[in-house]
Image (cartoon, rainbow, N blue to C red):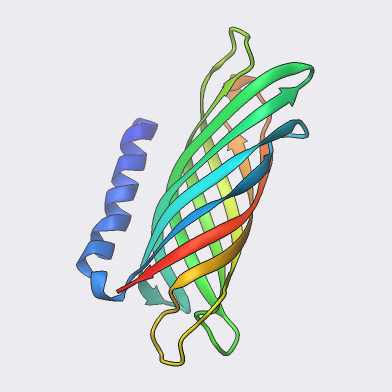
Length: 182
């Protein structure tokens, strides 16, 4: 089975329950500054959109899409790097006001494209592991989910396919999330 077909099936599996339980899901959109790229001087931005639909085992389960774009230099060459990934996410409420502090664990599947001006520029299959912390700036008194602006700090580790000859890399980001609640 191709990676594209596997990712498509995984997204369908994650999003269909989210649509069926839309009255209880949380959606969030994240935008932040990002750096990383394997010890090089690559900086850019990180964007993500996620849905969380079902709560079980103390976790809101869902999934989403993740995109980063980095520019800079690596080994004396100008380099541009795009990562576009998808995958399941577990959001764990922390503390007494459980929807104000969240820890996210996410598995990401997708591709990383790197262009450094050589013939080796191409898409590499990739698997990423992500952990993020959200702090909601203002939360209501009721039992409903907090919505509005949130601060997020996130770190990821991206493993590329071995046949690419390119190294795996960490990715760090911090920014603002807007949380939607129905």
